Length: 77
Image (cartoon, rainbow, N blue to C red):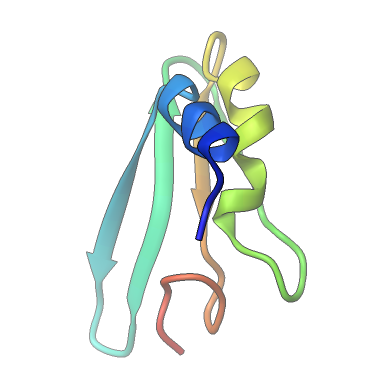
């Protein structure tokens, strides 16, 4: 469960959540902004959601993509 503060950060981050289905898995990722692309990869035992506080700043100048890695968050393994 997320807090009200975390929900506010998500709303203000200017990104949308997407899902991409392939033959072997379903990928979940965040994408937002415009410009050169920055790909944010989270560490072990976390998810794309850890990038929300930073994404709001980056999307002002860049296209930001933050996927959930396989077995993490909403991406299937």
